[in-house]
Length: 173
Image (cartoon, rainbow, N blue to C red; front, side, top):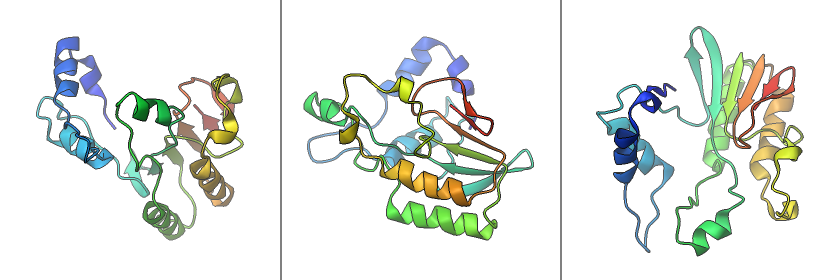
C-alpha cells in the first residue's frame, strides 16, 4: 500500500474525500465502492488496495493481508446518520479464502498485515474507558487468534487501536 497521496496538499485530499460515493437511506456504500473510488482516482495513482485474505509478495517477502474489525462506535454512527459498514468484519467467505491461501502457503509467511489483532494481543490500555467491553463483538479477533496459533510468521502488524508500539517481539501496533 503506497500512501503518497498523504503528501498532497490539504485541499486536494479534502476534494478527494468529498467525492466519495454518496449514501441514501436505502443503501450504504460498501468498502468495495470506496475502494473502487480509490482505484479510479487519477489524482492518486500510487494507491494500491490489497484484497482481504490474500498473500502478496512484497519485496520478496510473503505477506498475508486481511482487514476488518468491529466499530465500537457503531451505534453512535448509526444514530448520528454517519457512515457505518455492515461488512466491516471479514465475511465467512473471506475467512475461508484466507485459510485456504494460508494452507497453500503451508501456514508460513514473513509478515502479516491486519486491521485488528488476535485476541490476547489487544492493547487494553488503549480501550475506551467508558465503553463496556462486553458489548464489543470480538469474532474477528478470535478468528485471528486461531490463525496466529497455526501460522509461522516473522512479524504481525495491525492498526485498529491507533497506537504505536510493540506488543511483543513479533507483534506491533
